[in-house]
Length: 292
Ligand code: C2E
Ligand code: MG
Ligand code: MG
Ligand code: MG
Image (cartoon, rainbow, N blue to C red; front, side):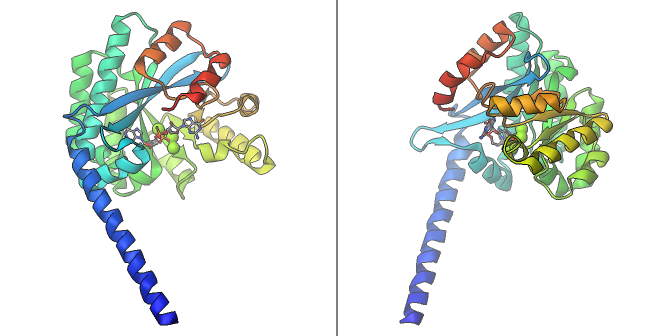
């Protein structure tokens, strides 16, 4: 009986694994056509200056809505895109869309807020991608320092040397580099001195409990000190409550991002925020109920 159970379990597991694989293959095929069918969209999440809560930038975040499958999270399809090499085209689309949007905002007299774009490790090791960025900067005529790229420690590790070389090239263009999801990798401190970065984004995992756990609070406080001592700036990610925001202010955290200020929003809603210039917390409730 035990053996039979074991066998059944095995077959059950393998069937599930098979289904999962078929599902992923289908997803990859859909992903292949997502650009040409216009299924991607960029949302913009405000980044605010913690000292006066003014709007200083936006992180561009990709959204994929498939006509049949509906919404698919970037956490699900970005890794697939990386494995299959589809990431190059997707990321080119993201950069192009974000930079052209930024240009349009400037032409429409919106304030000159920084646009922050996530760059995967794969793209960072791709020479063609770096050339593409140069071309787009030239084409849009944007100031390089109004553009920022976010890279993660884990994505850099695969080919550290090439990544650092290309990061330096990007930085030489005048584009800012942010180290994203800081603290989630395993040799973070080494990277702080190795990488040509300007900004560190503290991961939501650290911010989550600063109001309730003394340890987390201490870690964040000292990390901010350390980052400042290295002449870098800090963005706290995933601020969801007023209390977290208040604590981070006492720690002299430079910038903040999170549902407390605003969810990632559509272009039109971001334009409204830019007109106001600052975040009004009364609007947070509405946005929290709207799905992104
Ligand atoms: P990320 O770069 O760390 O982006 C921040 C994520 O945290 C976003 O999730 C954002 O919606 C979410 N977030 C922001 N504030 C809060 C908050 O207060 N609470 C909580 N719980 N979450 C918050 P999203 O948009 O689902 O993106 C997930 C990840 O997918 C991103 O993490 C990034 O690594 C990747 N991603 C998104 N767009 C792109 C893209 O265009 N290119 C690449 N390569 N990766 C992307
Ligand atoms: Mg990011
Ligand atoms: Mg992040
Ligand atoms: Mg993250």
